[in-house]
Image 1 (spheres, rainbow, N blue to C red):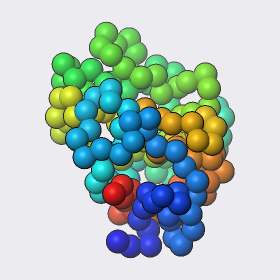
Image 2 (image 1 turned 180 degrees about the vertical axis):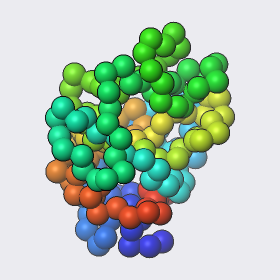
Image 3 (image 1 turned 135 degrees about the vertical axis):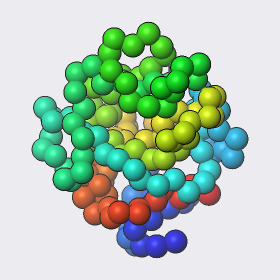
Length: 164
């Protein structure tokens, strides 16, 4: 482990010597992640990207990509673009990235089941804003908005999310 790793612990998400309260998937932590199980996958996951809503916030880091109207994330294991960002119109099962709520105003992407996804192993694991303290996710790791921004701005190339 390095100081640039984000380590999920019972006390919260540890990053650079500080603990940040967070929530995880409603299915707990699993070593056998499957699509739709609500679990946060155990393992070491590289941070591979950042998405943000340019209509709601300034670009948080130079490498962040804006979320545009029509940006979606495919969670349709039967299609070749499973676990990839896609554009509307899209016939397969998907999640809208440009949401009415603020959950995805800032998103860190991990390399869970990416870039060569295995069908049914589970789509994207993001770090994103929480709904409220203690409210579980569908498998992602969620943080207070100001903590998510602080972490994003302090990440370095090679940072990883470690879930034990």
